[in-house]
Image (cartoon, rainbow over all chains, first blue to last red):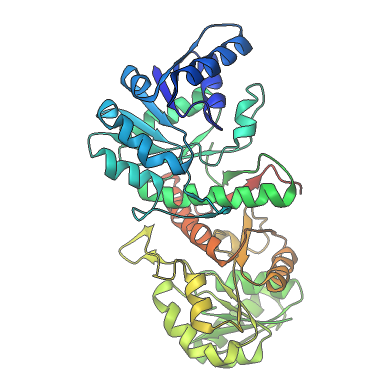
Length: 217
Length: 217
């Protein structure tokens, strides 16, 4: 599948790009700057020893892809959604954003819609299938693509088929995904990230995460 | 320590009462009806073979205890807080409540304060030290007091000392507690319960839970 990772030069983008590229997906890194996107794509290709990742501006990346992933800091959430609204219509749109309080990343500052995911769904309209995923996975661990990650990926959204697609893509990179319900569950899933950031700070670690227990695996 | 469990005849109360009583704490089951409280206390004592648990009306139970635990269904949250406001002043108050939507327990219906915990803190006033705990622990597993429970207890609240007390009480019953931050984190901790209920229904299990990964233990 062709997957565009918007804001893919930032925290979580490179790790997602590497892991999916190694698993055989066709990856486009998107950025506001084509040069930056191409530079990061070249670095990741060098790391893999294969030219599997391209770089483009966000709108071109979104237009070229079947699945679009948004990994920008929350302050750029709405402006990035605006820049790709036309290009993502009817596509599966994976929102990784976490509305952290810019003044204190151990706190959430949820948008009026309830969560970034619900905000994206409302803004992009009903044709686009917004799915939340990867919020609780440490960018640090994700980036080290040889490393196994002890964290479940909670996936939520209002379109069941789109969630199945995302759950499959999570599995492709060797992580386990759990369907956490409708888009509304993103209030919890996104919010958990602030608790994990708090634990990372307190325990001086870079990769706290969560596991769901007591369910069949 | 003397611990009153208000609404202790319901879902989570008996398990908490049994596990703490077995660990040597002095437990009072509270209920709106003294007869019901005494009946459940007698049943639990019979199960343990020792008369370690008493039953009282909620206000008397709260007055007699050092630590007060609230385990009523959310529909009785404010009315129960009202009935014990005077008796819990300056005490540590453990709120186990989860504001589930009465029409759909797989959904949350958060109060205007943001969470049940924040609502309790606002209603009881600054002298009472409200701490959230046990929301994500299956009542079913808790009740079977011989059974080990594969679930962390996320503890949050605005008073550090009170949180330490609660973390110690969680450890006493053989569970591991994690400090999840201020009272505001209860929006996530309480909300997780609706996701776990959803998973219990989907996988036909009674005890899904969560574990925090990637931190020193």
